[in-house]
Length: 99
Image 1 (cartoon, one colour):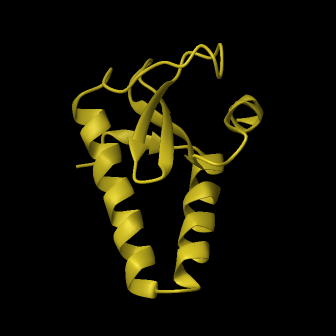
Image 2: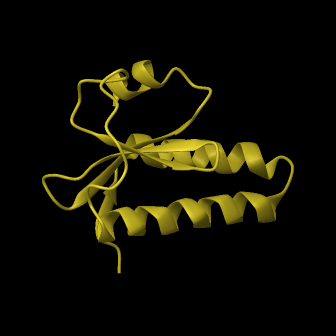
């Protein structure tokens, strides 16, 4: 059961992640996306896990690491909303502010 929403920007992020990884391996791309989706459900099951990063944004969002990615999510109001899925090397503050 899916207890979360994925923003259009986060869907674009997931597609970009899949496209990049699929250049080397379709199976690996599928596996990473599956792991991200499993983590989304875990976040929905336990809202509030993860951490805030006031050094990155003043927005009321939390961060959850999955491999080299950061899942950015808002856990209120419910349902939980996936705001972005970012690679750790990205300019996280700039990307979060655009979402």
